[in-house]
Length: 245
Image (cartoon, helix red, strand yellow):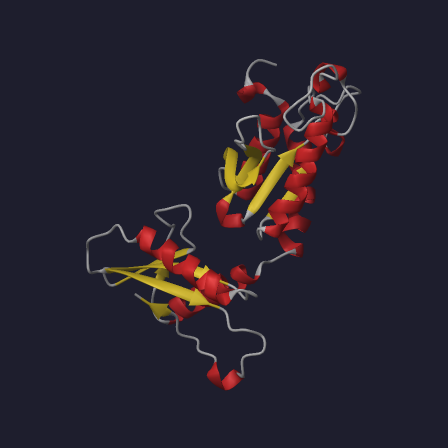
């Protein structure tokens, strides 16, 4: 294989894009996902293979060297900033991804060569695209269906409320916007938050996110925050109307 665009990883992410109907942010780096500190104290952001913001989904394609000792990749005679060789550091960072990604309310799907039509060396040389696409669907569907986030519930409820009020939901102009809709020349941009154990912090985050979205000078553009009620909130105090700015 040539460069990264020809790699097995790129092929798998292409299949995920096709199945999901969206294009991933590849080699995306989250500020909260970092490696160990080097000599200067700097902690590098760790990349994830594919990230679909609207699906809140991360896909990691883990080739054989992630699960087996491979001297060529492990470089056992060299120590990394973690104080271990590269193979052990890879396992350490994989475990960090496995913990931190779900902890930040994102779905995580891990795909391995043996999940697809791999040869004895774990390479996807045969590349039966249709068969592999079916396999990708079988792997991703349970991840997407088993964990609908509470924020997704709020987005779905707000989408229904907007539609009932005569709004038309449209593709967001920014990939990080939770929901965007139009009605009679007006546009509404919304940030959604689900149930949380830290409502004050999450409210501050939501308002900060909305402030960053306020780039349109037109008065016809409105900004809204949609939040789900706490399960302990009495039904008489619950409101189906979002707060807006």
